[in-house]
Amino acid sequence: MLHISVRGVSFGYTNKTVLRDINIDIAHGEIVTLLGPNGCGKSTLIKLMLGLYRPVQGSIYLDGVDISRLASKTIARMIAYVPQIHRSSFPYTVMDIVLMGRIPHKTFFFRYSKKDISIAGDAMERLSISHLAERPYTELSGGERQLTVVARAIAQGARTLIMDEPATGLDYGNQLRLLEEMIRLSREGYTFIKSTHSPEHALWVADRAVMIKNGIIMADGKCDQVINSENLLYLYNARVNVMWVNNVFQICVPHAVSDFGQAGAGAGYRRHPGRC
Image (cartoon, rainbow, N blue to C red; front, side):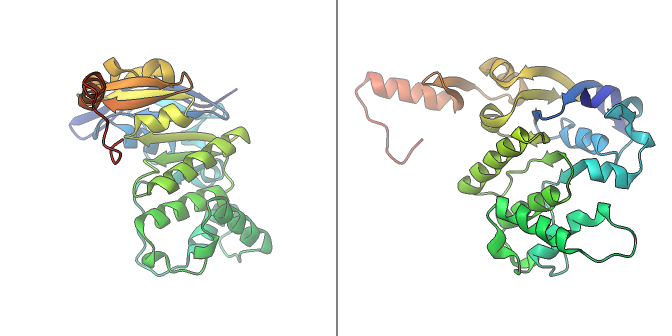
């Protein structure tokens, strides 16, 4: 059964059309990456799938039900959102922020239970941030804040995570930790929809890539089929070579760097050890 179905969706602001006739079907347990340049409509599509915006045309279905018929709390129990940038003006602790993920399961007047605290603790442990539990959120680095918001989404208990450029601000180690956790959660049946500017992340962890440009879908398919030099040139106006490494995984290499490497090898040069 399809989990999320976007059928003929168009959306715009005042005199500007942002998305046109978008059709996407996402199954339970899939990892789907949205790729495209700034302003192409990725974030708008995410907000439509969260029920924050309503389409001008078309419909979005969540487990077969039109999302416009669902209460916001019902949607929050099914879908968790990880924004690109999250700020707080108040010095809540990291534990406080992660516990906020439990709010969709609560009535208006509530106290967090031992179960809520345990769920929040497990979410932080998954992302190796348990040591930050009592730290004020306002004193964290950008990467630590991002991991905290991801932990909050996991603690929310929703089986679908929609993530807007989740690796923003993360150092390389934390990026890998986040991607590894996405793979583990996907194997447990979680669904991921994430936008990114890194095709490599899609090649490493995603089942599908959906490429969006000028408000329309230009490609939708398995990552190793649609993430290629031709599509990346059209999408980003950048010359990139997509290469296989030992026939195991693919990497994206800027065209000029690949040319330099080939020329250097042919001339007997060694690459600088500090360069990728």
